[in-house]
Image 1 (cartoon, rainbow, N blue to C red):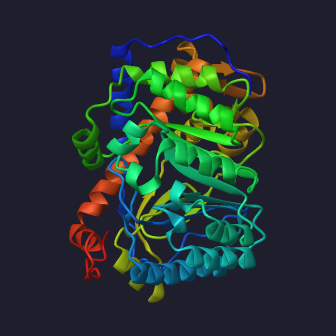
Image 2: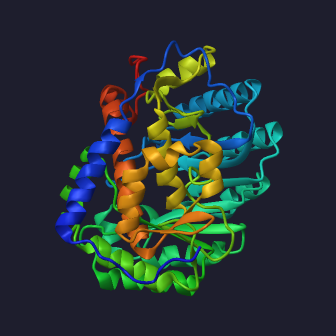
Length: 445
């Protein structure tokens, strides 16, 4: 995917206006309604789609993380995995076919035997071609590698965030996962065990300087890992308060400066397989939404997108267990996208991966795409964000930064929705933070 090398940097006020508009648009897009009685799964599409498996357990909760996660308790985790496997079987019975699998969290490897059994089930039900699993540096251990290798995991994604010891301490990760040097050594020992080793990093953290980022990039280039994903700091309001209390305020004016450093340093050794993912080869990209028309999310707090409808499962782990093992689906919220919203979704996520092919536009939306999307398409072209080739619309370097902002605000809107759902089960989440089992909570979240 070739792109222009020049930059048309937005002024700070224009960027702020752009972000404010995006925030309003995506907040509207994430307004779900009740998902019905929960007895019916979506109709299986004709083509294979992507399976996302959510494992919400972590041994410790990082302040910057806005994902649906709870503190690991073995008994509750085993109950959860039992329901998770039952839900996976139900999608198989419904006729769904899955080509690729992504297991995220949380930390999926906190219960390796349960994870292994779940991946073995998936392999038994479908001839999947790839499995990606997230983990943390402390789980880069031989006994966990053995489980993942038996399951034929093709991509291991390690949440590192930074190699700077000061930032690791501020994030509460130093004591849990070790120093930057210890993490570097574990990554070096892991390289080559899986088809793709990805390292997740965060840029524009509070207190992070350009020199700190330069050092992080130098370590990654020296390691030569297969893939690196550089995420801008993205937090829901509740997580943002925790980050600011622990680390201070991030400087939004630094975001562009740091992103330009990343682009300049990572190329040409790596190619940009998305606006924030850089690969040496053809490794699996972190964002499964880029290449799939439909995807299914299983587990508490997971999202699905099937045939133009968004679905969300209950955020209550107890209710998730009871609903699924009681013969119902875990889905409690849904939203049918309008034709314009579906066009906008395709424009956003396909271009995030670098290109939107004209044949795909014709097949899915026809000529009306160019009518309904004319303001967005024209504005991005005039801003120098896109290049219109005969076969596809492609991002320029300027466009890559614009799409960083767009996807950040999209995920921030998702995080706000997660915040709202988690507030409804506050008592249950508080009990997960203690040594007692969660009690009953309403089944509406």
